[in-house]
Image (cartoon, helix red, strand yellow):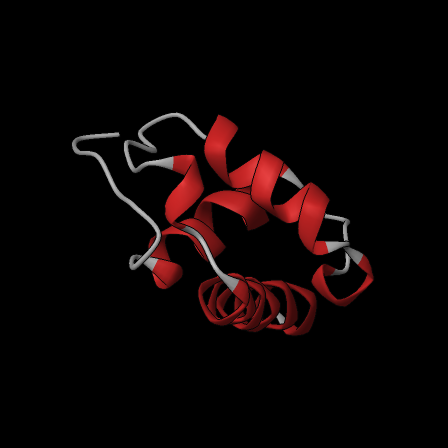
Length: 73
């Protein structure tokens, strides 16, 4: 990956999660697990304590979009 990203980069994180967990339905992931997985992504450079429910929801929805696109394609 060329750069780093943080909590506000939901689209990038959603893409990265879809790459790492291609068969995982994002709607079945607990936010505690989602938080941990995001902070472990290569290139993630934000403060783990700066997440909140709204940011996790945005990431989950971006991941869901990517997940659905891949299943339809």
